[in-house]
Length: 330
Ligand code: SIN
Image (cartoon, rainbow, N blue to C red; front, side, top):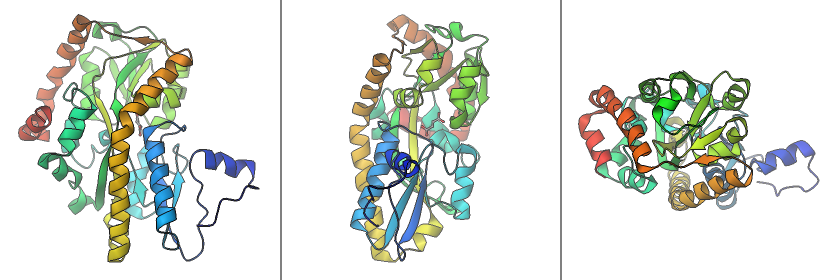
C-alpha cells in the first residue's frame, strides 16, 4: 500500500474520512470490503477501518483492503450475491438479512431474548453460537469470520411511543427478517422491509412512520432528525456476521490465510470489547444534537415484552427449540 498522499483531491479526501484510505500497489491482492453503515463513530465503521489498517500495514505487499462504506459499492439487496460472484471479498451484514439462506439466524432477532450485549456475546461464545458461525459454509460458500456486536435496538417514530398500542396503525421500516415483520404486526403496526440506505428518505417523506435501530445507526444516519423521538425499548439485538467467501479464503496460501484469520480474530475481540462504550457515546451524541429519548417505566417495558415475546412461538420450530433455549439461557 502506498502512503496516503496529502495532495489528494476533495473527492478522495471524502473517501478517506469514511475509511477508504488504501491506495493499492500493483502486485498486492485487492480485498474489497463493502458495508452499509457510515459516520466515524459507528462500531462497524471503526472495526472495519481497524481491520483494513492492520492488514494494509502487517500484510503490506500481499493483501490490500479497500473499504466501501455507506452502501457506496453494494447495498443490502446485492451484497451477499456480490460476495458469491467474487465482486467483493469482505462484508459485515446484519444477521437479520440472511433469511433467504438460513432460518437459524432468526434466533438473534427474537424480541427480548438477550438482556443486553454481554448476554448476546456469551451466546456467540457458546458451542451453539460457534457452530452457527459456520452455518452457511457448506451450502452457500460463505465463511463467518466473527460476530461483530452493534447494539440493542430502540423504536423511533413520528409520534411519542410509550407503550406498544401507541404504535397501532403506524408503518415501520424493518430489515428483511420474518421475525421482525411478525413483531411489528404484533404491535398492531405494519412492517415494511427496505434497504438501510433508503431509511432516512422514507422517514423524512413519510413513506414510513418509524423504524427500529441502535443508537449508533440512529445517530450516524441522523434518523433522530426526522422522528419525534426514540424510545428506549431495548427490544432486540443488532449484530453482524463479519464474513468472506470460501473461494477467496481457499485462494490464499496457508501462511497468508493464517495471518489474515489472526487479524480478523483480534479485530473481532477488540470490536466487541468496545461496542458498549461506542453505543453509549452515540446515545449521548443524539441528545447533544437535540434528539429526544423516552425512557420507560418498568410497567411500560413489561407491556412491550408481553406484546412482542409471543412471536417466539411462531419461529422456534424453524430456528430449533434447543437453539432458542441455548440463546435464552446463555
Ligand atoms: C447495519 O447496521 O448494518 C444496518 C442495519 C439496518 O439495516 O437497519
